[in-house]
Image 1 (cartoon, rainbow, N blue to C red):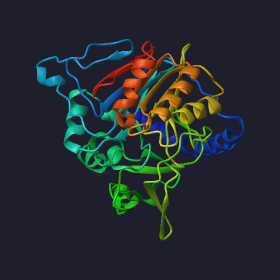
Image 2: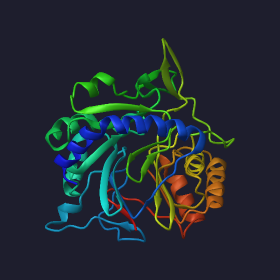
Image 3: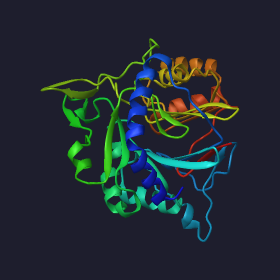
Image 4: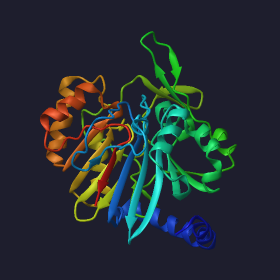
Length: 345
């Protein structure tokens, strides 16, 4: 479906879809998500903390390849995270952007080198409101405004615009550059949609909604704060979102931003809302950087029990946890690099 047809269909069916969403979200709270199978999933890591232009293809990971010059695969890496995700359902392709990284120029260059077609994007999502996931967003959307259709859905979780801060070692408070609603509205481009329950964003890809904290060890560090009224209180990341997809014949693919509420909790929530136990791949930030060794090992023990076919920890997972996953789960582990495409079909 081309862009013009997509817009026409959207306009013609808007009221029906709205009612369907209301019914669907009410049913979801009681019955979970009836998640359809996806014939093909392509997850492109637009940026991450690590890059390696010489790393070979490995299992489901396809590394960038230069076509005209070695500079074609010299990608920008940063303390940030951004994804492009494509699903193929009933032979039709759908795509969206999930998180937007930190540095606009670096993100823009990577999108162009990776040949990501923004005209085909059907939705925008932010996992949570920290700078390393959204600082480049407004400038990127401003620069690429002509490529993205007006009214594109922009999904955020509960209390997304409350504000985010970090307590420093000297007991000061540092803003994590919270994205303001007016920053988005002034673009005159997107439709902001705040969600609490699981929701389909494009065919075959779902936001998982609130992540229940069921483990006794995946605690949110007290350094993270948010604003409630006039007070700064510990952030519970109640609105942080992850993505779940159901790869045909293989199982769930869980895509995380930072997993502040716990990567084990995130995966279990995906299993709970879909009713599917089999996990094919868990990919993304696991927020274990700086964690004590015993917490890392408890996490790995529980991930082992879930038995994913692939485990791909990066961004905020941290060196110690990444190397521990590589050591403890060598058959499942994949080292991520910026620009890698994970192709599941």
